[in-house]
Image 1: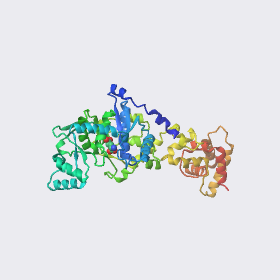
Image 2: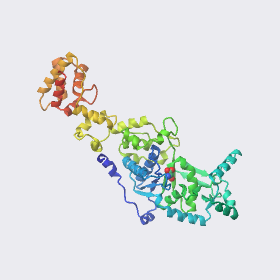
Image 3: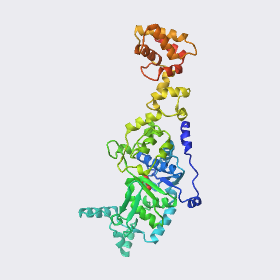
Image 4: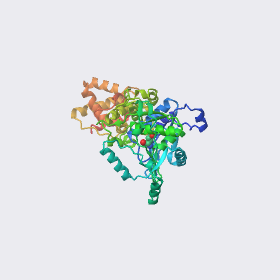
Amino acid sequence: PAGRQAWHQKFRARPALSDNQRIQDRMTIKTRFAPSPTGHLHVGNIRTALHNWMFAKKEGGTFLLRLDDTDAERSKEEYVDAIRADLAWLGLASDEEQRQSARFDRYEEHLAKLKADGRVYPAYETAQELDLKRKIQLGRGKPPIYDRGALDLTAEQVAAYEAEGRKPHWRFKLDHETPITWTDLIRGDQNFDPALLSDPVILREDGSWLYMLPSAIDDIEMGITHVVRGEDHVANTAVQIQMFQALGAKPPEFAHEALLVGTEGKLSKRLGSLGVSSFREKNIEPQAIVALLARIGTSDSVEPIADVEQLIATFDFARFGRAPARFDDEELAQLNQKIVHLLDYEDVKARLPEAMDTEAWAVIRPNLHDMGDVDQWWQVVTGPISPPEFSAEDREFLTVAHDKLEVLEASSDLWKDLTGALKEETGRKGKPLFMPLRQALTGLDHGPDMNALLPLIGREVALERLAKTNI
Ligand code: GLU
């Protein structure tokens, strides 16, 4: 909607750098968010996307949306569209977009080189055979690491498999002699013994790619400087570091963030299905999601900050904790309410009833739990309203109120002058003075400050409402 344009325009996509520019400008920070379009983004993905985006913005870098759509069967265009739309709604515009499905040639080319270098090898075990191997290892109290049986196959054995119609899958051969180390921007120094990892399968027997190698190739060729993702990828990083090296590239920096958990302290199914559509249904503002996800799990407190540039300014991997980040719907709802109270008329104009102007927004805004309440309060202004039944004394009092309002000067301060005159005339004060008036004028016994609301309702409508109570 147009109301969100200011927010979007601040971060309008920059044109992607040409390869030449990128080579000249190696130090340009570039992050990527790499979802597989096999489903909708959930709050955990959104958090990862946000952190990649914030870091790129903070560093004046580039934020790439990379669609990991090598799985032709499970990847759907509908999800690609939904991912783009969700990111746009959140204000996380990408500067560049790439799709893995357009890059199979690149992967084949690198695979050929890795084959020539002896860094990948064919293996013929079936899933069942591999499963059996693992069970035997576990039975002997050993870790279930792939035993590299494929490397011992004789030419005859390979020929026999091929004659049987078996197709190989391909594994990346880890270098057992070179320990894997990196300094993670969140987790600090990391060390892995490659001999304790299985050589990962990179290409299936049906020719489809697994995620690991294409991702490393893309990170190299697209000039990614920082890989920011969940800590569930730490072991993948260990393997990918050797892939970067085997491909002749320096690995990027890595930041693995602690995972997101629900209030129950677990990785819940519920969080896995919580995405932009459920936030929109609950009238949660994108700024509230951004403010929450920018800060949970960090040493900075969650604050109602609607201006994302303020959040970007405090973004720092050093402030990310190692404990899981807790996502609490109640915290989001409360933050959302505070954010709504900060939104300017221009931010929300497109979502307001047509006749509602800046003044009306200012009067109604403090009463909103969320934007879904706007219509209800606007109806208090425009009607119809349904006031309660009044007692005989109150009816009489409201008749006096009607007559007083009728004779107020056009320039008068309606509410102040009306209640002042009534107080003097009837001797009522406090609740007996204000409540029947509020009820007769709004149909409710709570709501916006009457002083601000009455001018919105207008003298004419107010007179009608007061007159009605006495029929
Ligand atoms: N497509 C991968 C995933 O969604 C990307 C992980 C990564 O950031 O490298 O898990």
